[in-house]
Image (cartoon, rainbow, N blue to C red; front, side, top):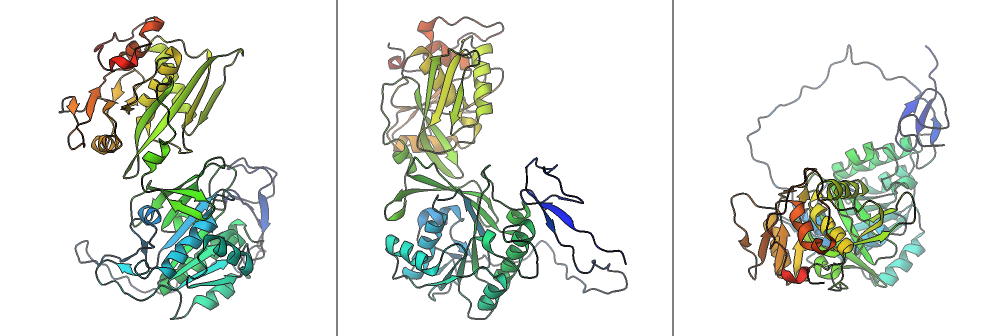
Length: 498
């Protein structure tokens, strides 16, 4: 039998090769390839061995709804899809020091303290108390206790342990009286003693996670895994780790802001792209039930280059302020600084303003910021970004009571976006009186259906209409093939008073 050869596996993407090299050919990362020992015996084929026949069933049938275990932290339950599902595995990733351990310690403390938060929701839910176990591979028990004292949760019924051996953890949890919720902080520190590679490598992370998830499914407890992230912001280790778990959550936030965003990237038991907003304080993370009001708390009116965008994060409408600043550039290549938005979409909006609307904007230094530390990913922010850019260029403020949303096409048309009514209702709830938005099919402009206070919807079909209103005093040149202005009353008269 031929001798098995060693494999060289990239610790960033999981790609394997027959020889070592300084750079991974799959992800172009440097010094991430390490040698892994081969298996002792090669896998054998299935020929000559019988297997158990599968029992196939039809699509029609009755399936019991999995009961939810509410944690008592509403923002966390929203992102998890309404609560924790028995036997599920959740992976929480985030930058170092962002608050992952603090969040999970507060979650297990809430489960172990609140008499109602630790009960299964839904029909047939059990009313027994929740047993929680917090296993730390990075900190000692005394260090976790110090954090619990700072968070004032020392009275919670949470069992602590410091361990990194998966064999010891499985031996402690593999019994009928296993805890209901188990936290592993973090999966990169765990190791399986049957593998020769160091903790944190691809093989160790994959095998350790597989053993723990299999145990959680068999015993029926909720498994919460903490994952490190790379400098690119993705969870370290193989991408197969995200496929193995049921839910992937990212804890986002800027060091300079007190806000923290918990975002669901994958969720088998609830909607993805849902967010929960927290505020970091001296006493830990505090829920923010109305993030729109908090993001707009420090907003100042009558300033050019600012506008309010009505966005959607999962099923939640969120209003944030978008700030733009254009300044004459002394450089041959002007600066483009973008915080909280896609720089590629900014380049597209600038190109449309230049080619379709006749504004000379590319020769300026351009700075764009989403206030509050929130990152916007949906294209519905195109019109709000364009309005902020034109307002800064013409030095004409946008109306204080106006929200803006809409997608911009390459020809300059303003395209419709989804969930319009939810955006308008959120804006009306916060006291806004008008919305600049794309035309809605089959409906007339005017009072938004279902919006409290009768918010006025002002529809704009082309970006040129907005430019002519805000940049009228700047005498913009007409680009070849650009669309002439249609309705000159799209913006309130206060927006053009200089």
